[in-house]
Image (cartoon, rainbow, N blue to C red; front, side):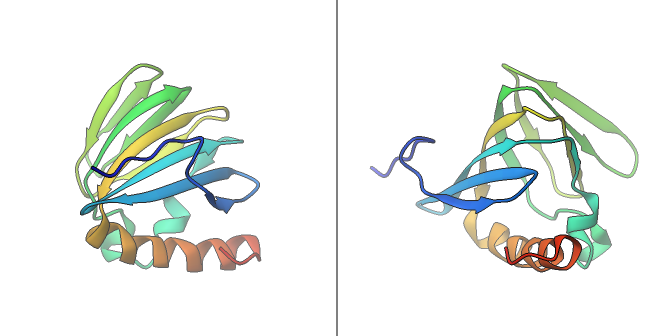
Length: 127
């Protein structure tokens, strides 16, 4: 049975605002993300349908706080909370937050391509 941990999963994204480690486990991708500064991620979803994330995520907040925004409401989770974030959201993270999050690999891949292009454009770096 496949497994992954924060300690053994290589860093895939190391930017001024996030460190991300990702591993595929069957048809799911687990992400270990740590946020180094406050981040409203909405600009990074520009170009996706409705400029929002089309994936469902199942996660656990290991430190700090994450807020998911939808067009009609928002939900905030803090350290120790588990969550399910349905499609149609944009996330907001506080500095020092970290999450472990599971997403369907087939859905997440195209989203990460768009996010990567937006990161490169906004920050002037390669993702």
